[in-house]
Every structure is written in C-alpha cells, then in structure tokens.
Image (cartoon, rainbow, N blue to C red):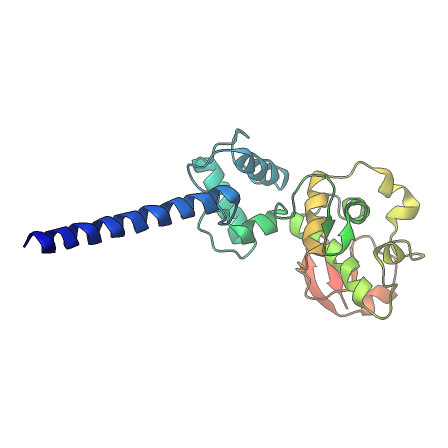
Length: 233
C-alpha cells in the first residue's frame, strides 16, 4: 500500500514539475518576443501610445495620448477596424497594426518596406500629401496605390522615381504643391500602399472631375470613386 502511495506521489510530482517547466518556457517566449502580445483594453505602454497617436492622425478620437488603452481608445480602434474591413473586436493585432502603418516600425526612422527605402517612403508621402491634400485617408492610400500600380504597368516607368518624375504625370511638381509641408497621414498612406493596399482595385489614373481640364481622362473607365477623386484604368 505504501509503495502504491509513493508511486502516486512521485507521478503527481512529475506532472507538477512538467507543468511548471512549460509555464517557465512560455514566460520566456513571451519575454523574448517568441509570442506576439496584442494591445487591447487595459494594456499600457509605448505601443499603445503609438496606436493612439496614429488614430489621432487619421481622424479617429482615442482620447488623451497617454499610453493607456481605455474605453475611448478601444472605441476608436473599433471604428477604424470597421472602416478598413477588419474584425471589429477592439484588439490591435497584426492586421490592425499593419493597417495603421505601425507593423513596419512606424515613425520616420530608417528601414525598408518591401524593397523600398525610407527615402522612397518620403518621396511617395510627399506626392500623396500634395496630390490628396484634404482627401480622406483612404483617398490618400488610393493615390499611393495608383503610383504603385503604374510601377507594375508596362505603359509606365518601372521605378518609383521614374513614375513620379515622368513628364506631366503630377501637377503638384509644376504648380508648387509639392513644396507644402507633408501631412503625417501621408507617411502612413505611403507605407500602406507600398505594402500592397489598393482601395481602387487596380487603377492607374485618377482625377478630380471638378478641376480637370484634360478631356482624354474622361474616356477612361472609372473603377472607384473616393472622396473628390475618380480612379480609372
């Protein structure tokens, strides 16, 4: 009887040790980034601050930028997720971070984005800001997407600078609009379009019907209307 009790005790002890070891491994993985922590209601820290700053830039209202993920921040995240077709659970996971433009490091620091350098991001953001000033954020991404689509299209130069500086391509380069301060949201829109976001569905042209004097552009097939711009192929 004593032998059976001793065996049962040793078995239980081994199970407890194995469980504790697994818990320690999990904690180590979390600490080292082996598992990705998600920002959600109740979270605090620098990532929450970045999320709040980005939401504010994009016209959502997360409340005070204080690094505390409270009710107003959660509601702002939900509104953003609904606008971008994401699961509106109020949790900032990888997809929401990417849509916010924070998954690639955010800010204006160094790095590359899908083969494009930070200077490319700066150039694209400058054009987006000049061409889509006053447009909704999705409209800014759409202008960036048109530029990216042109790079891949055989009728246009195959580099970012080539597309942007192609003669007559963008009026902001000749009317001085490119010299205006670059909006913060344009940097996010540039990164998002470089990462493949395209709310136009493949457009290679865009125009404002209230301003254009180009009769040819009216002959192009319109595939999307976002803000004041029509996007065409």
